[in-house]
Amino acid sequence: MSAPDYAIEAKALEKVYAASGKMPEKRALNGIDLKIPRGEIFGILGPNGAGKSTFINILAGMVTKTNGTASIWGMDIDAHPRASRAAIGVVNQEVTMDPFFTPEEALELQAGFYGVPKSERRTTEILEAVGLEDKRDAYVRQLSGGMKRRLMIAKALVHNPPVLILDEPTAGVDVELRRSLWSYVRRLHESGTTIILTTHYLEEAEELCDQIAIVNHGDIIASEPTAQLLKRLDQRILRVTPREELTSVPENLKTLDIKLLSSGDLEIAYRNSETGIGRLLEQVREAGIGVADLATSQPNLEDVFVAMTTETA
Ligand code: ADP
Ligand code: MG
Image (cartoon, rainbow, N blue to C red; front, side, top):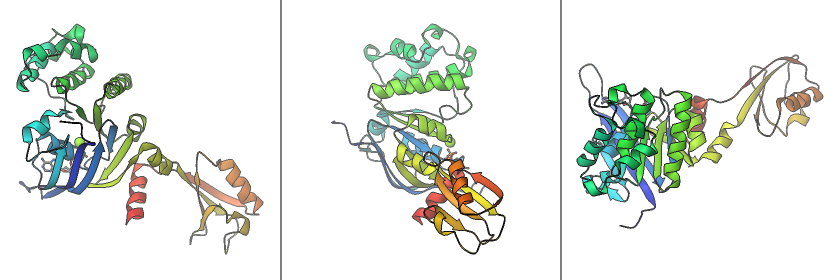
């Protein structure tokens, strides 16, 4: 089959977890549409509880969707459950490992599970790629947390999938290992693998991903190239409390993105990469405004969610 344009395509994908015990019904995915182009490193960014793992687990066949469709590598997951899943390797959020196998045994078992013939197995190559060749005969319970994570990635690669999906690969991982995981992910990407990762760290998505989809409360609220998204994040707010009350915005400040709030404060939005705060304050002084107090703020992820949801509303 020729390579599809999209590694993953979801249409109106919905998941409602049924009520159980004291837990009420939970709508985790609210009919999302998402297209993940082949060949990218694609980030799915959102706070805890946003629905990221639910999405991944539907693709992996571990959670049953309530409605909508999804396809992997051009194959519908309902019509072609086995073939579609053979196109992805999924590394789950939780580290789960049988402590009594060695890394080599773990990979061989996994290859057997996927029906990879002995002659086509790449156990040694994969162990080398994730830097575990000298631990091939160690018991998994003797591996450090970081090594276990790398072994999980290795296991997801045994059937040579064109798409690797990493669910929060670096949550709870130290900085050094995070760096080495990132560089490994980049190498895989360079060799042609489409990479999808979920994260609640903006900086992680920013550093690695070509494109970022932001998910919040089960909705995709943005999906765009990283550079474009970062432009929005560049916005800063300067709030000035004038010493004397103003009745209107002074004429020579009207070129700025400025508002006079009902509290009497002036609120100026600016781009951090373009305008220094010193220059802004100079302009305020030049307008004859005495400054009683000032504060700056920059949007965090939560603000970005809010800004985007109100923009599109
Ligand atoms: P994320 O991975 O973005 O943190 P999840 O997909 O794990 O989010 O969860 C989305 C929402 O669905 C959360 O409110 C979570 O509590 C709920 N949820 C996840 N798994 C289950 C489940 N098995 N049963 C009921 N609710 C669930
Ligand atoms: Mg999760």
